[in-house]
Image (cartoon, rainbow, N blue to C red; front, side):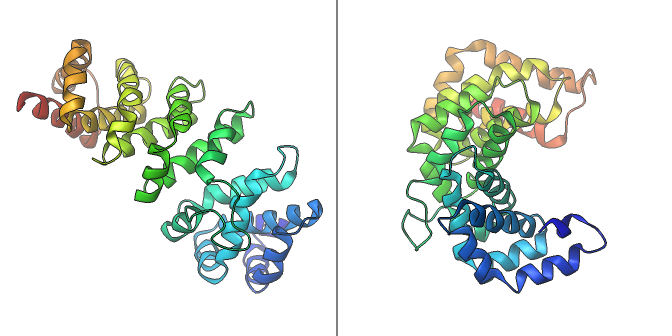
Length: 276
């Protein structure tokens, strides 16, 4: 697994690991901590590359379940760290996301609790890199309808995401806002995150500091405006609408420079409010 980090041997090392996925899964599901450490580390290194990630998911789905399960290990265990990193990479692949979101106990190495609940515990923890990683996985899982349902049915997760909107780490903040924006784009899940989405609006006041955050916050605002309840909430907070108007005006006068997608979200928000 360590050789996968070396450009000279990475391809050969990955090929060897791919030919031995069954014993790697056995290690990852072992009750021996050193075994779990080795198995999850190998899974992480395979998940780190797109080609080996897809092969791992297609050939050994049980190893995906094992990595999710290992997120329940004690934080002091290295297997926990490697599993978290593996899940981050795996969650970038749609088929892996579906496996990760399968109901608990769907297989011999499936998690005892929902991965969304596990990620919530990690996001609430004091380990900042782990919290960032968990927020990234949550953002990716929200791309699946099953992920949005799981998040929407877990108020604690939404509470964690809301608190991460104010996180001092820009990447963690982006992942949290991205998750909320994705949730608001789904008519079935938007109600569960309305309050969290409203909390994203103050981020629009820093339109020059982080354009990506602004784009995501505008996407969340547009999602709110797409529902009658959301429009009512926005109209109750006139400052929210004036903030979006200001962004459009400043963009048109070239005082700020936003991506076309961000501007589309802003105009979409105002269009839906104007049409109501």
